[in-house]
Amino acid sequence: MQALDALLNRVSVPRLLEPAPTQEQRDVLFAAAMRAPDHGQLRPWRFLTVEGAAREQMGTLLAQAVRLQDADAPQAVIDKAQNGPLRAPLVVVVIARLQAHFKVPKSEQLLAAACAAHGILLAAYAQGIGAVWRTGELSYSAHVAKGLGLTADEEVIGFLYLGTPQNPPRTAPKEDVAAFVQAWTGL
Image (cartoon, rainbow, N blue to C red; front, side, top):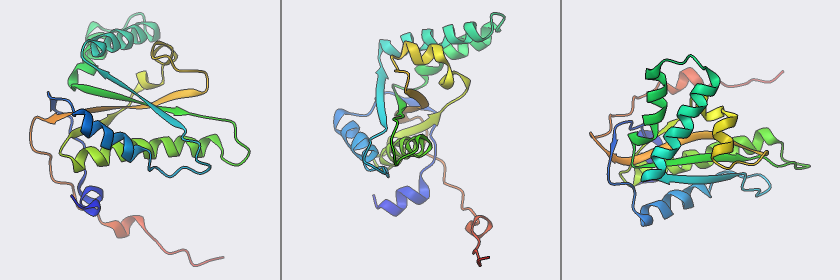
């Protein structure tokens, strides 16, 4: 697949089935992540792969976080959190590792980690792997961060769900680029 095809046509694929990406495909996914723009070459990211029975344990962690946030949470909300990681055969937790640096602010490091995640999504699309980036309130839960083993300088910035598309990916909408671009003519 041509790079421009992936850049112009990648879409989120939320309905995912087994099998998960192969090890060879994963190697490409994570190699693509490493090409993210990275001022200072800090590599301010890391990834956790969650699959098999670990997805159920992750679901338990998410359900616990729901209960901690709201002791009166409806059972349907708890069940949704519990079953969330089962929506794909592989979940990649994207973690920003924010470091004190004299030249690279933490906000820039966070953006670099997001670019690394986007690299994974583009590489997934290029290989025919279905992928969707999910966040939500539980992504930012201190309980979830602790359960996943994050350190004080780390934060979850998303969960990438990966697998075999249940249906062919939809066609990417064609955007009116001119609505988002304008020339600055100076002061």
